Image 1 (cartoon, rainbow, N blue to C red):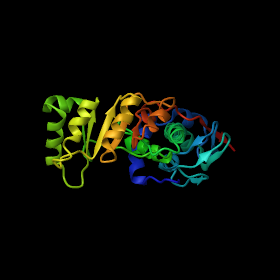
Image 2: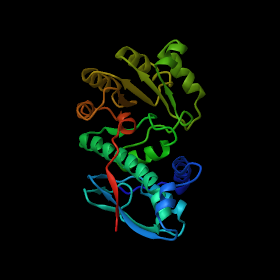
Image 3: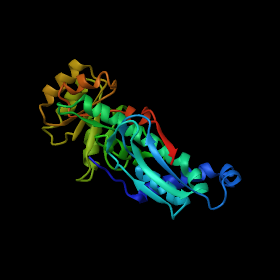
Image 4: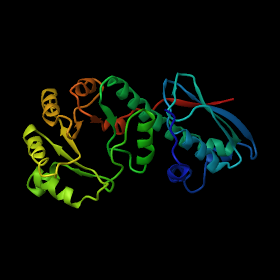
Length: 286
């Protein structure tokens, strides 16, 4: 599925990254070696197969330093490609383009790496009901872009921040004095459109949550944290579809299929954003 991210969300990241790279006096190498007014044409090309994310960042990075540049985008975010694929062709002022090159490649490689890893997880659970979700374990300042990259890979986004959903973790439970108390307080506080999720670390805590159903105070989602496969299957049977179940913890590409086959609805994977390798993409002069 092709995905787009509004320029308004990308531009602040591009400006910050360019300012970091250009420093106080700009690209000294380009100024020293490249004749003023020289132009160049080059292609962003994949060195390895993957899934594209961040092509909009390439376009905005180039245009930020040369508003008259032409950026011919060949593939859209969410598209799969093979090694050697040309992702975009740029013609621009040579000094400006060479100054923008590394920032554009950094963003494109990072985001395509996230999308590619996400696609691997999605394919690993194909045929089950489980959906792959990200977490808030993102690079500071890049959350919107990295979560976009997860969506490009076929995953779904968990909450974007602390303000768009209630997620009760073990430390919240400890301060509140128990799972049931924490959930009751959250349900009483939450606006009618806000979901409440609670993390449980054992079947006893799950039973305490299920007891809230008769009170009308059950959460919308229960996160089963570091459950064994046997306990995941037991949890799915006990809940019987009454609450969305999310598995978390101990998830990697060798374990995710087994977790999905227990019948959980969602599997959240922090590695999608905190451990995705940068995809190898290069710039070839034409």
